[in-house]
Image (cartoon, rainbow, N blue to C red; front, top):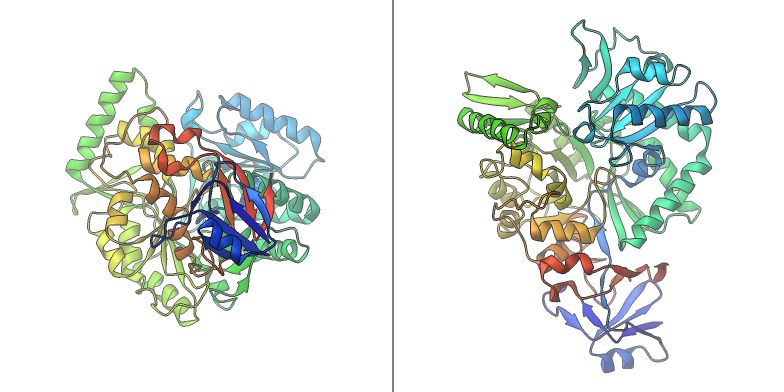
Length: 563
C-alpha cells in the first residue's frame, strides 16, 4: 500500500472536491479524505510526500488515434517547422528512400499546405522524380488525405487514370491528370496498403513504436485513451501487445472497417460488443464517419458566406498576403441558389443509409460514435442517433458525436435531449483559429461551443485527435480556458470555460463518455488508481499562468509509469 499526502488532492468529485490524502492498494484506491483517517485506513502503508504538489485523477484523452498514430508518427516528420517548403519535403523523402530497399513504402506524415512557402503539397510528378523506385505515402496532418506517387498506384494494382473511389476525391490538373492528392476515401487503399506492408515487414518494430509513444503519453499524464478508428488488423496488433504485457495505458477501441476508417463499418457489426473486455483493452462504440476533415459538410446562408468573403479580402489587404485565401482553397465551395446557401464538404451517407447502419449496430448491443464536424453532418447525426440508454452497463458508452465543430444553434439542445456525449478537441481552436477569424466565420457560425455544451448539461469529453495536433492535456485545458489562436488572438465568442470545468472534461466527462464513470475519472475508494501529480494546483492559478503547470509523476493502475 501507498499513502500520498503533503500536497493538494483534487478528487474531481463535486461532493468532496478536495482531500488531504489518498491511499492505494495494488491497482485500486483504498481511501480518500483527511490525512489521519486515511492513515488509519492504511496501516503500514508506504508514505509518499507530495512536497506541495497536486494529486488528481489521471487524464483521459477521449479521442486519440493511438494505434495507427504510433505507426504513422514513426515515419518521416513533415510537420512545420521541420519543413518549410515542398523542396524540404522531397529532400526528406529522398533521404528515407536511400535507407530502405527498392519497392518498400516510404511513409511520411504531418505536412500542412498552410505552412509551406508554396501553399501546396508536393505533386505526383515531384514524388516520382524524388523516389522513382519506391511507393510513397505522404499523410496530411488531418489524416483525411494523402499524396502518393505512380509507384504507389502500381503497388496497389490501381491504374492511375481508372481509379474512381466512392466518397472520395482525386485532385486533377487542368489536363485531367491526377496530381497525386487523394482525399477521404480515395486515400483509403493506399493508407491501408502501406500499413499492411509495414506491419508484415516488421511486427516488432510496431511494438517498439507503441512503447515509445506510450512513454510520451505518460510524460503528459495520460493514463487512458479512446482510440477512435481501430481496424481489425490494428486490433489484432493491440491484442498481441496486451497479451505480451506491453500495453500499460488503458485503451478503449472504436471499431472501424477493414477497408479503411472512412468506409461503412458493416464488416464490424458481428464483432465484440461495446463494453467487452477489461483493462488495458476494451471495446468501445462503433465508429461511423458522417463527413470529412477539411472537407467537413457545411451549409452557410448566402449572407454569411458573402460576409466571409468580404472578411477574407480585408485580411488579404491588411496582411498583404494571400495566406487567408488558403483555407478557402482547401475547402471548395458550391453555390446552391435554390436553397439560398453555400455548401462545402463531403457526406459519406444518405440519411436512410446512415439510419439503417446505426439501427443495426444498436440492435447488436453497440453504442455508436459518429464523426461529424460540419453543421450538415451534425444535423444528420442527430437525426439518425437514438437516445442513449439509461441502463448502460460498465464500459458501455453513451452514443457520441466526435468533434461537433460547427453546429447550428439548435444542435446543442437536440444533442442534450438525446443524452449524447460529445468529444471535443480544444487545442484545435488554437491550430485553426487564425484561419477561422481571417475568413470571418467566428461570430457568424458557432465553433466548438464548449460553454453552450456544458450549460446544456451534455457530457463534454476533452480530447486531442492526436497525432493531428499535440495531445498534451494541460495544453488542451489552457486552450479551453483561454480560447486563443496560435497568434494569441482571442476568439471572443463567449465559449470559454473555467479551469475546473476544463479539468472535468479530461477526467469526469471523459470517463462518462466511455461508460467508465464507476471505474475512473474521480479519486474515490474502489476506483482504479490512475493518477497524475502536477507541479501546482491548476485551479489556484490565473489562466495566463497555466503554462507553468507541468506533470511530475504519472501512476497507472497503481504503478509508477513516469518518471
